[in-house]
Length: 288
Ligand SMILES: [Zn+2]
Image (cartoon, rainbow, N blue to C red):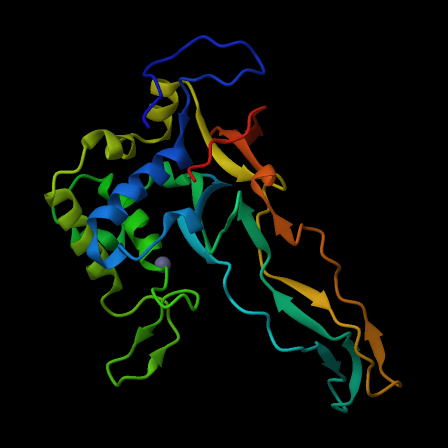
């Protein structure tokens, strides 16, 4: 569905301009085409993947996008402890806790992965001065953004055990989430995708930087979580287990200040500018 009009349209305050580009919706539509056409990514069920935006300035260091896994199991019970630096004696400890992933549901679907794009930084990503440039000799700068989309999708593990792992040359599991050929394989998938002549209107929006998008569409909006700038993240849940050593002081761990369960009602559309993100009075369209 490509509904966004071109150019600036006049709109009253507190009403969302239909002309604004919904950036996360555009990325989701593009991902649907990518997954359909890319054999290595064809196992991905995008109804279990939610794309959302975080804020990050273009002139600041930081990620362009991140793949967040929600399927990691609950951790074993544990606690923090502190020792006296001189005697080595246990001075205090935390209560027992487990670490859990929050649950995110959109309608009847439980979301397994979140992919966040950092706006406006991502819209200004370019091959120039990037390590990816080696894989795209002579290519247009905006391909860095298409590469990032493939990159994040490639982090989704076909075995559903979290973030894709890589095997070292000696056959052992690598702890790094980027195997030796990760960047090369991503670039190869990008090349094959473009070589199959996808509809340009699906990816054209990637050719514009933030100021150009703002000028053409009169604004950039994106799906975010209600507790923006926060979003669903692993959290600690205290366990009601007695401490073995009563002479040591027990510290309470921080109580959860975020929801443990998120639904589509926790999704808000925000307008991003180069300085901040502002909530709009409309629920985002979520592709089921
Ligand atoms: Zn990565």
